Image (tube, rainbow, N blue to C red; front, side, top):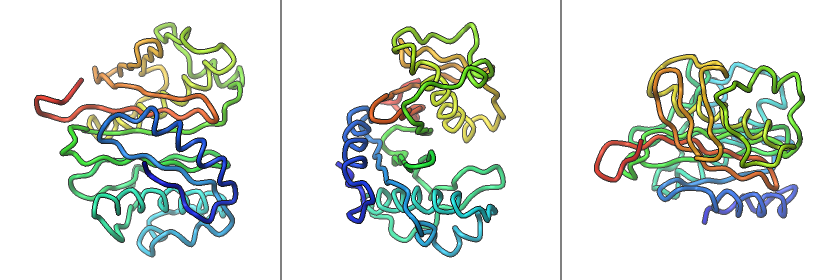
Length: 226
């Protein structure tokens, strides 16, 4: 089990969320979380800090918190002091042989990483507060092809939004296609999504204490999956 940092502002929130995330993570994917704290931007390595254009303090704190988690996960794989730079498209750049994803909301940062040798070809992760999605945003996100009746109605929209964000992160490194919400059909009952490009993506999620979605695509080999 991946452990959260030991200097937390809210250790119980981290531990509860980490337990939920570990409960949904497939074999081979390591996950972690951290409550975002004041001065978390200090965890950005120098090259990381230079690669992140935003000067907004809250965004830099969140980026530092997410990378702090990811650095710990990479260290568990024997990769130390690895700078996770930001690409021109805004995606994190991972070392050779690794796939991963970062996300944060206003209070919590999360990360997921996996070695390609674990037959995981790509990962996307998203985190959201476990509250109802505003109706105007839901109108932009939902399509007639989405299936959400497996989830309680008050959180179905939020989970759908989070799933599409995670699917985009998992699919873009493979297909290099800028997906909109209407380009992704999510079936929460089946735990799958399909993109406009024909990419099939698996989904795993929790809705308490926060909404977290892992989207993942299998790698090549006999133990890979679509």
